Length: 253
Image (tube, rainbow, N blue to C red; front, side, top):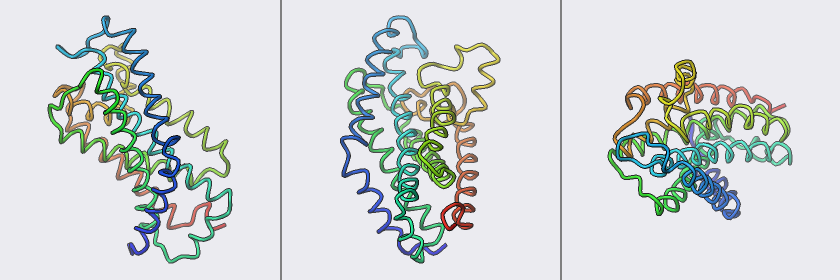
C-alpha cells in the first residue's frame, strides 16, 4: 500500500487530457448539449416523469451523469492503452510504484476528467432548464462513486486490451449499452415489467437514479438501495483492478 509517486503520476495524467481540453472536455459538453436540444425539443410537451418536473429538466441530470461515466472510462482506458502501444509504459514499470499508487493516479485523473466534463455539461444545459438541488449530498456521492467505478473499469479495460480495436469493442458493446439503457432518457417505470427487471440488474441505472435523486428529491428506487448497489460494485471493480495491477497482468510481459 505504499503511495509514493501518486501525485507526480496523477499530475502527468491530468495534464495529458487537459492539454487537449478542446477535444477531451469541450467536445463531450457539446455532444450532451445536442442531445438536450434534440430530445428536449421533441419530447418536452409529451413526457412528464415526476409531477411538476418538465422533461428537459428531468433529462439534464441523466446527461450530466452519462458524461461523467463515459469520460472517466475513456480517460483511464485510453491512457493505459496508448502507453502500452507506444512502449512508454516501461518508464513506469521501472519505478517502485505500488499497485495502489498506480490505481490512485490513473483513476484519480479519470475522476477529474469525468467530473470536469459533467460540471461543464451542467453549466451549459442548466441554462435551458435549471434542474434544482433538492438533496445535493446525493449528487456528490453518486458523482464521485460513478466516476471512480468507470475510471476503474477503464483501467481494467486498458490492462486487458492489446490494441485500440479491443478497447473500442469493450466500450461499444459493454459501456455504451449499459449507459444508454440505464434511464438517462427515460424512467424505467415507463418500461414493461420484464424490461424493468432487466434495468434493475444494471448497476449504471442505480448510479443515474441516485444522482437524479439529488436534483428532484424523487427517484425510481430508494437512494439507499442505489448507494448499496453502487458501493458494492465499486468494491468489486477495485478488488479486480488491484489484483490485476499486482500481478502485472499484460503490462510486465
